[in-house]
Amino acid sequence: MAVRRLIAALALLSLLALPVTADAKKRHIHKPAGIKGVVLNGSCPGACAEPPPPEPAYTGPVTINVARASDGLQVTSQATNDGHFRIRLKRGLYDVSSVPPNPPTCEPTPETVCPASGAKTKAIIAPCLTGETKRVQVRRHRFTRVELHVSNTCIV
Picture 1: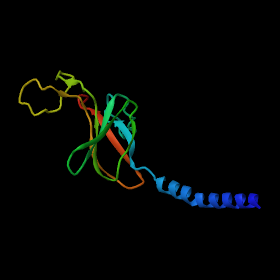
Picture 2: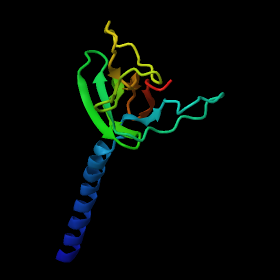
Picture 3: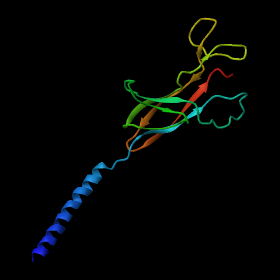
Picture 4: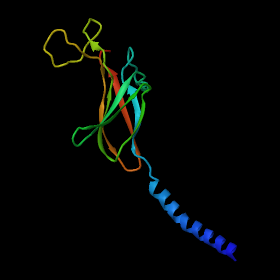
């Protein structure tokens, strides 16, 4: 008789424990959100073809900066060398930028034309590699796809 009561008590306890663990698992399951994408090399090597070939992924070092669009406060950044990135973020509106680290400067020569840097001097020294910024909306439980570019503006 005592054995039957013990078995019945254990069965009752195991049944009571199941909903608690199921609820605990249910509360912790959520899909992450953020951005994922690629940084493309927007430079045209040599003479550009018509129609242009697909842009390859940028293979140099680049940093992906993420700032809130509302106040410009930087939320996070991630360095990449292969041009691909994936960053978890809360839902919201963000400015996502590709920034090449320490870009080389452009010094004008007969073969190179430098971009305008705003200086009114004869020797314009401006960075050759420039990144791009895009405004991105991150929705709940989704990763938003982003394509950014890095271009060498010293190549004509």
